[in-house]
Length: 225
Image 1: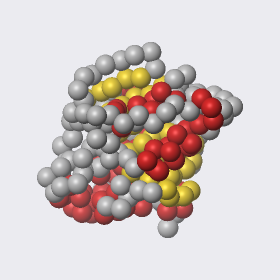
Image 2 (image 1 turned 90 degrees about the vertical axis):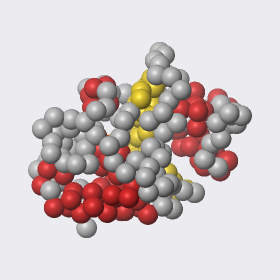
Image 3 (image 1 turned 120 degrees about the horizontal axis):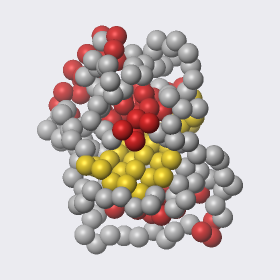
Image 4 (image 1 turned 135 degrees about the vertical axis):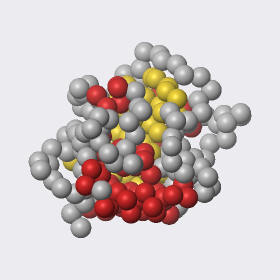
């Protein structure tokens, strides 16, 4: 597995400026972007996985220049790879209108309870088994959940992303998971179900910051409560 050692915080003077993209309107507010840059100034270099649009998080990727950043998007303008940043196209087979049914099925399915067999061997409907192997093989320091779209009933929703992220995060020693749009019901439901309120460090704007500790042997469920 790919790991990263900790490094001293990046001096504030090295933070990149906040860029506004003319052709891609970001759904991040100015305060949320400042929060992200401050958060990552103490985390880089790191292994960063982003479910979301590259243009919205390009400033964060620029800050993580000596780390590894992977973007997973449903509709990237291009699938590409540079020295430290990769962009992959991902297909989703869920719709937001089925969120409650998927959550109910997951609660009743033994394969969905702390299923660490991703991508093979799992019969959990929430698992994402079509991600690049690099995603499964890497121990991620930070995961951002801000994709795919989940603002309409027929959009993919983030049910599978939050579930899969919760599994990946528990494979390492410690992973921060930043979930965006927690003002929406699906993000709240699934974050509380699989990332757990006891792991919630704090909230900032529409972000929840979870700190997930791995290495809990023989655990049969995600949350204590």
